[in-house]
Image (cartoon, rainbow, N blue to C red; front, side):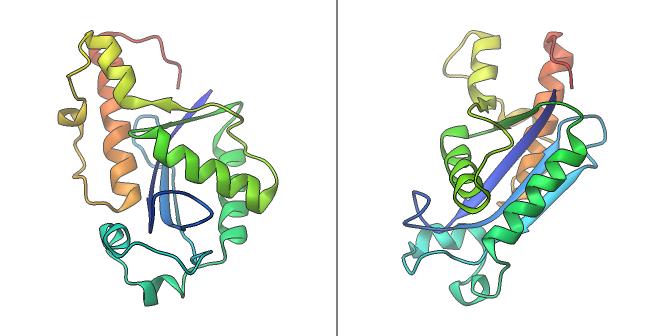
Length: 172
């Protein structure tokens, strides 16, 4: 299995009514050198200015981003290239990130290469340390900048550290 850490930025709380502005992905393996980054043109007139501000882009800038169908097709092709077998979606907040990636894949390409499952890094860590109040974020090395590739890398670094420190039987 190929674990692929994903992070997205959006201009609102849900896909369809609002837009995924950009996303990043990294294959979880030593070196973290297999990455993907996509910027997507908005699919809706609606947006929440505070949500969009997190991405660092203005609405005007996002209007020049790439066609979502093209970006999702490229992402699907990238996943096929980097995942020798089944790709596994994992993120810090899979309830949010997964919702957008899954919706965009199904809406723009007709299927999701990740299937119907996703994993949550925070929940994994809480289970390993047996404390629902513990947070993994101190294990990141790359700064959390809200650039989705940086954030995905930081989370992937944390997962690699968790695997090493706790002797997890995760095959990357």
